[in-house]
Image (cartoon, rainbow, N blue to C red):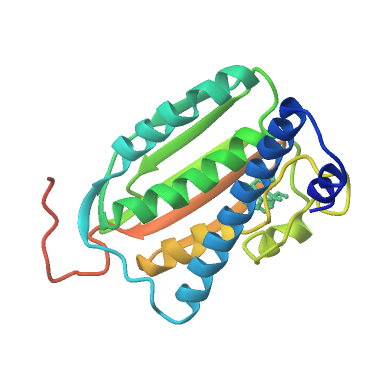
Length: 212
Ligand SMILES: Nc1ncnc2c1ncn2[C@@H]1O[C@H](COP(=O)(O)OP(=O)(O)O)[C@@H](O)[C@H]1O
Ligand SMILES: [Mg+2]
């Protein structure tokens, strides 16, 4: 707002106006995301987030997100690796959003030449696990239980390195829980891992899981 007010105090060149519009646009984009995220969480609080019950191919979703993040990961010199596969019953768009939040975090904290690994496996009958692992400074243990809190950021008080509002993990958690799953974070020896555990057939055990 200040920037716009300053620019409006006198006539400017078209270039100057353009520059301010671009800068405003970035800010609108950030605000729109934050409002969208806050609305999503407010709905989740009231049980209004009801996932679809489609058969979702987790490996396919991960590969699509790898494609989406490819330019960014190349720029950062970070590789993305997928292992395993698995189907769950759930809401493709929501699951993509949750996964995307995990991956975008992993990309931010992985040092150059590091690799992010997404592992999909079946730890037990009727269970599907998806873990996102990245190298990077160990998160001190006292922060781990709070990472999923709204607006919680480990590095918030220090220099801000990005524009996130601290809602990404809260959203991932509410999506995973709406699917009858759970998510946990661990971090040691410079490796951070977010692990989501789903019931393989989703929240509808009476309906058999069939691939699309
Ligand atoms: N892969 C990761 N490695 C290290 N720290 C992480 C990772 N993912 C999340 N965090 C920490 O958890 C905080 C909350 O993450 P998130 O809810 O996605 O919010 P945001 O990305 O907007 O900061 C981050 O600010 C960061 O401190
Ligand atoms: Mg985030």
